[in-house]
Every structure is written in C-alpha cells, then in structure tokens.
Amino acid sequence: MNQGVEVVGLYVRDQEEALAFYVGKLGFRVHTDVRNGDYRWLTVQHPDQPSFQLGLFTPGPPVLDAATAETLHAIVAKGAMPPLVLVVDDCRAAHDRMLARGVEFTQEPVDRYGTVDAGFRDPSGNGWKMIEARR
Amino acid sequence: MSGVAANQDPKLLRRLLRAKDRMDAASHEDWPVQRLARVSDVSEAHFARSFKEAFGVPPHRYLLTRRIERAMALLRDTDLPITEIAFQTGWGSLGTFGRTFRDITGNSPGAIRARARAAAHELDRVPVCILSAAHRPDLTTAVSEKRRREADDITGSSEKEVL
Image 1 (cartoon, each protein chain N blue to C red):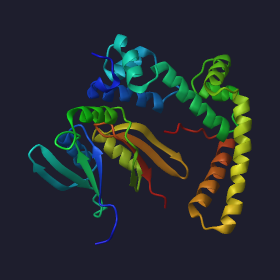
Image 2: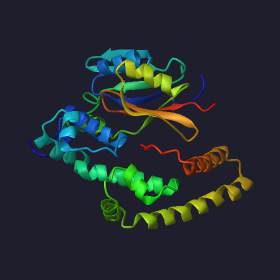
Image 3: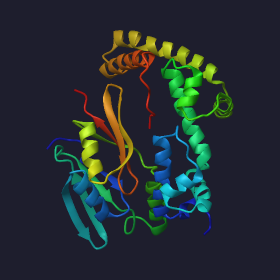
Image 4: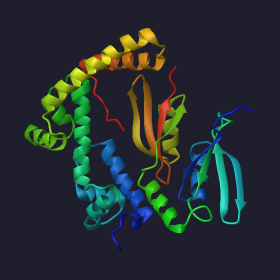
C-alpha cells in the first residue's frame, strides 16, 4: 500500500441523487456504502483510479448540528464550494455522452491553453471542470 | 421569512445558481429579469431580490461585472480594437462601455490595456532568469502557450470566456 490521499469528500444534498449522478451519469463505481443509523458512509471511485475515493456525504446529524448543516446545504447550492477537476481523454466526446445522460453543463467545450475544457455541475451544485489530458 | 441569507431555501439557491451560470456562460447576451427568472423558475418580482440575497450583488450588476472581466481579458490578451471589444462583450454603445468600465475598474479601457501590456512584458522576462537556475517545466509550457495564444489572437481567433 502506497502512502497518499485516499478519500476526499463532497457535500451533497441527497446521497441517493448523488449516487445516481456519479455512478449513472459519470460512470464512477461504488467503493463503500455503509450505514450506521442515519449516517451513511458512501464513496465512489473513478474506474481508472483505484487508489482514490470520492466521498459523497450529506451534512447533518450526528456529525453536525441542524443549523450548521443548513448553512452548508446553502453554500453547496450556491456553487460556493471549491472547484473539482475531472481529466478525460476526449473532452468533446465526454461532453456529448454526459449531455445525452442529462448532465447540466455550465460551459461548452472550449479550445484553450493547448487543451479542451468544459464545465458542469452535479445536482447539488458542486462545480466541475472537465479537462482533456494533454498528449 | 427573516431575509437572512442562511435561511434561503437550498433548492431555490440551486436554481438561482443556474441563472448565474447562464450569465457566466454567455455574458455578452441580454439577460432581462424575465429571462433570468425563467431559468431559475421563480417569479420576476421575487428574482432580483433573491439573487442579491444569495450572491451579494443584484443580477444586472453581476452581469456587468462579468462583462468587464471579459473585456479586461480581451484588452490584455488580444489586439482587438476597443470598439470591437465593447461589441463582443455585449455593449450596444462604446460610451456605455467606457463609463461602466471606469465605474468598475477606476480606469479607462486604454489605460488598463497599456498597464496589462507593461506587466506582461515583465512576466515574459521571468522565465529567462528562473529557467537558467531551476527546472520549471510547467512554467515553460505555460509561457510558450501564452505566446502561442497571443499569436493566434493577433490572427483573429476569438477568446471565449474564462470561468
């Protein structure tokens, strides 16, 4: 086992909805889905990246009080969480495929800086840049 | 309804974000309140106040700010005439563009262009001294890429907006 970052979590408004988005529309796989009462530890993984998990977490009890959770839900919905970057082999092809599956794009693919990039959001409001890998 | 930002319904905020995203993606287009309200699926009467509560600025002001940002990028990265930049970023008149530009940046478009050019020349000198002392492959790529884009822009390719 190598050292490094294994899980980075996102706040999502609804874990079922997030699961349908990241697995059904983006093609990620479920890595761990464990419940303990109301708490659900849910992580997904890019099929090409077995050493990294993206956590899909809902802010709320028992980890956070209701008022804090409400604030976090608002921040996510305003698109104020930090940007995320997805690297793909072919940005235009990925855009077309994802658009057909109903992904909400905020920016069409654009050629610049020697590559192609596009922008989309998950249902909660988390913003992704999708960048074509430089060859 | 207390009017405190934290109490806005996240579902409403998510829809307001959609209107903000649409302005970001096409800031050169006209965005009357009824169009934005439709994107967010809220009433026209409710839209402007909700948007300001969510994002801290009224929607029209937000749009103007985005247009000025884009105009600044075009002033910096291209040799397009200022009239053409005003037109490309969504203004119907050069006068309105110049006035709004000065309101927001405190300078005229011409002054911003001159300053950006001067700063760019200083940046262009950075890699020469840094690269002689250190290996910075990313920096080399970025600078050569910037030069290539500048060359492209001179030949007339247009710049899309940057997130």
